Length: 438
Image 1 (tube, rainbow, N blue to C red):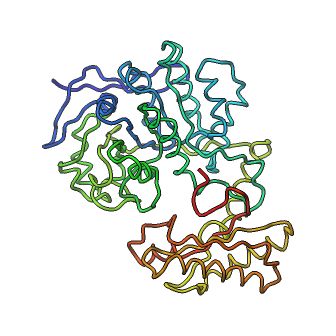
Image 2: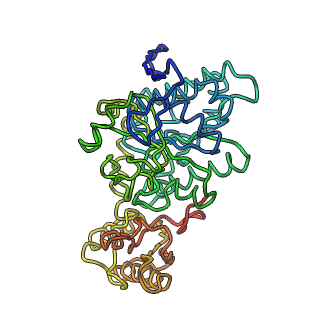
């Protein structure tokens, strides 16, 4: 049976919904069984309690796939929850009321996506509000006890309390918070969930440790199927030629296939290493042409929100010396590298400007270094001594040895290992520490 895929435009917002005129399958190349993407995800839930789908930020095909899934009766019958990246967990009650059909003011609802840790403004695109509206519309027709719940996976940041570059803005803990939601709200309750977030958070071969999938796999191995969307504009010409044999809107498992055996760079997964099947379980092709990505919408700089967004962006730059791992050390040494001088001076300047500021000085080692715990302790003390020598009261600086926990990179190259040999400083609070506060 041939598979015919078409796109229908529905709703006032003109959301594109992927639909299939049959449930057949087509196998244009050996070893790959192609199914409509929605059907593939639904079938995956028969085996896995969690299915993680990569969301291409600002891409209409990603939006269409999401809306197709929530509108599918089989999906509604088997899945209870959805966890998304594009909402601030601080406003979970707001989105709960909205999806339950309550009247929620537009300015109150917009805080869900406006006030995330992400300062690019990408989540201000209309597609994200439209995706929540699609769930609300579906819930109107579902009986009590079967309505879909959307969990907001971005940390519950309160931007009113983030005023200094030394303040913790929760960016470092994004994956940990998302994983905590999945564990506490989904798996401990014996529920199934669609996880909808950027591909870098769910790729097993991604070069960044402590990503969502790493945390989920470590806690519950085998629970999660990972499906990443392919962008034909990012693959090699040889791969693109084979993918163009596929109809758009399909998905396929990659294990044991020619596609799974490829290096991830051949399919455009630039932040991962290894083969495709080591990185993901399945792929989806939503278009046979390069995917388009809308830019963050323009915000009136003179508006209250525009001014606030610009403040957050300036603050993000200023946090670099404190939280971006710019204060680095030589291998197996507690000696600063030359490039650490400028960020140390920036920290010193902030301490002199804000006389009430007390800092937790967190120092880290790379796992490949000798005695990482003791080494990180010496590094933390060296940072304190450097600032005290320049006039800062030692009582304002609390050293903390973090050993090799929370590496920035996996450390397979010298450059990556160098990024892990660092110090980070954050305002001293009851929740500040080496590990996430959750």
